[in-house]
Image 1 (cartoon, rainbow, N blue to C red):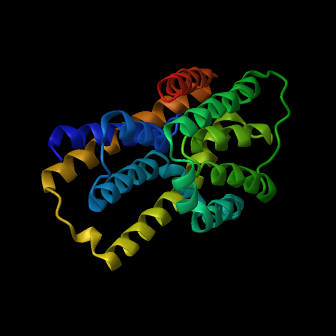
Image 2 (cartoon, rainbow, N blue to C red):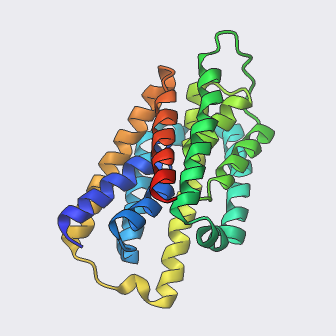
Length: 258
């Protein structure tokens, strides 16, 4: 892998990981359109670590609050919301990847993501909307949405933000909870991959240090940019933009892979 390929991979990873457009769906498209092969395990792990770092730094104040006494309810809610995704990952990840990894299926899933964002936009725009307090039941519902995003083409951030809004959360609260909920999932998935590949010996395969640094640096920067833009979209009630994007890409995918 060249430096430029590493930079491109880092940018795509960072942006699509956090914007509600499905990173796994874009990866399937890249494999089919450009013949992009699977990256070496170490490079893939480093990119995920870089995007995890961008979430932690972006939400550093919120994460710090979790360790204080007033953060107890949020800790309970994050734990409740994490359970469905952990179970889905352990039970269905390999099956889902093999069955739902085709570009045509991903295109349909992107259209579903586009549809999911429509009620989210309506909820954001509602003036007299009833707002409810965050609780374990609501968190579990958002966690179910996160678990469904194991299917390539379904965006994790789109589904979780929409689920939060549908359960009565404020826009910024649903954005914040969505990504705090992603921290244990990204960290756990990355650690699991490291440990499993260490056993198989795949992790030890050499990758140029400059390639790693370039990929990680741009994944981190684009991840921060993606979080910033999504937060602004939620604050200014413009999440419909991502619905339009997913509709266009999903429709194009159905045309290309008839």
